[in-house]
Length: 152
Image 1 (cartoon, helix red, strand yellow):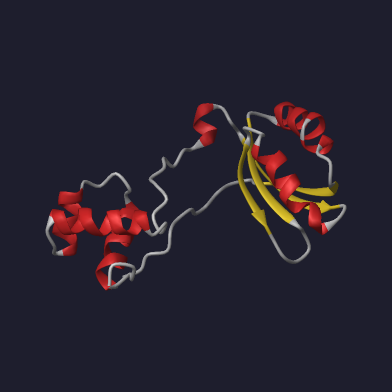
Image 2 (cartoon, rainbow, N blue to C red):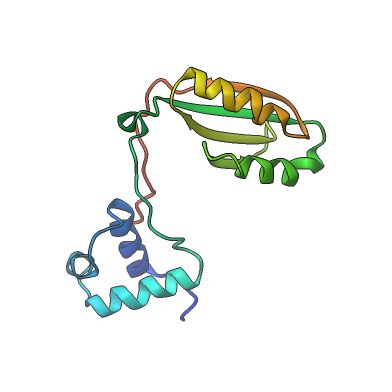
């Protein structure tokens, strides 16, 4: 069953979700399998699109980007979501975009160095995107948790 995910795959995922840089030999030890098994199963999960890569988790405030902002975006017409999302993807400060249900059509996470930087991106770039009817902005005061689901 090469295209199915089983309990061992979930164990490997949980270990890598906790530390994406963990060597396969260490993952294998903790999972109770061979490094070759970890390699083969990880490749399978990448081929299935389950694992999309490994990323760094940055503390933006420690490198001078002191603001995390969430934007609830209202569209002029709901059919414009693809066009607006493509425009938002071009903004380097935007790090997450969700096409959503509920009050907002699109929900965005972005980072800025300070309030002036945010204002410039917001006024000069985001508000000029065709299709946006309005935006509600939320400033994060502090992030208290960021994690993946552990499957074991």
